[in-house]
Amino acid sequence: MNKHIALLLGLGILLSACGGNSNNTADSTAEKETPATTPAASEKGIGEIKSVTLNNPLKPDMVATGQAIYDMKCAACHKLDDMRVVGPGWKGITERRKPEWIMNMITNVEVMLDKDPAAQALLEECLTRMPNQNVSIGDARDILEFMYANDGKK
Image (tube, rainbow, N blue to C red):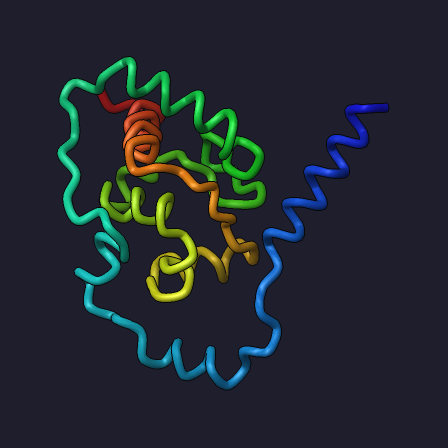
């Protein structure tokens, strides 16, 4: 019985986090007609992360920490394969997106969804805004390391 209540509570929180502004008809059209369309603007995303140095080889402790954060904050909406649940699956994400874009999406989700063309395209596809999970830059870096491991990178 307690599991059902927790599940309903979690679903209610998720649905309330996914709500959007319903009165953005004319304004959203104007924004979509004039986004920052230069490839560099979307390549690294919008946010504090401007450069990421990747580990070669991956650091097992960062991968383990990233997986723990994934299990706690991300797994309900993102699967590790290419299956979309609420959000897109993570398989191949490190091949499709720059590491800076991934970390900016994790740490600066509101601005990314409002201003980044690639993030806006994902929002149109998934129809659900990613909630801000208050992930620190350090934790986002660990999640990124886990994503690379998930994609089979060494």
